[in-house]
Amino acid sequence: MSNCWNCGRATEPSSGGAVLFCPACKALQPPPSDYFALFGLPVRLSLSADELQQSFYRLSRELHPDRFVRKSEQERGYSLEASSVLNDAWRTLRNPVSRAEYVLKQNGLDIGEQRSSNVPPELLEEVFELNMALEEFRGGDESAKPQLEAARVNFLGMLTEIDEQLEERFRAWDASHAGEELAAIRALLNRRKYIQNLLREVDALLPAAA
Image 1 (spheres, helix red, strand yellow):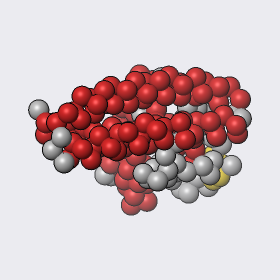
Image 2: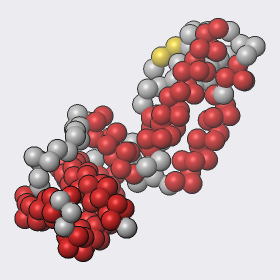
Image 3: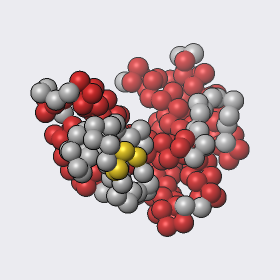
């Protein structure tokens, strides 16, 4: 529990949310740094895109600096800060992958950069063959193009499969908040990011061959 900076009255957040305006004097309070709290949501990985969007539009209107031009300097500052945090929260929470990365980071599990040396074991042979085809194609060997096109289709299929697995893991974590579920989500996100990097390599070359 905290006290209103303006009138000193105690403010008590609702479940899963934060007090944005003092219930007594209606003064705008310092915005929470937690994205879920700002939206008044419990920490979940499965969210309704429509509900999130509606909440974003509502909060954008309530916190917009134009509503506070005649307020105190303190509230004007809080409005600017809240609008900035809200935009960051919207960009993060509306995308399932960035939302999961945010929750992982909040729980001390960063994703990190996926480098070429960090090949998932199950992809070792495929990555070796892909690198060979990439080198041949860069050297002017057009016969490698079908292999690259096939690899692209394969990687897109892998991403679709991973996204389906992530949806299942999201629901499982929402129900349990178990650490092992977060670890499994982190592993899937690492694999997803690595495959995306491979896909970018292929896409960077294929248009030049058209």
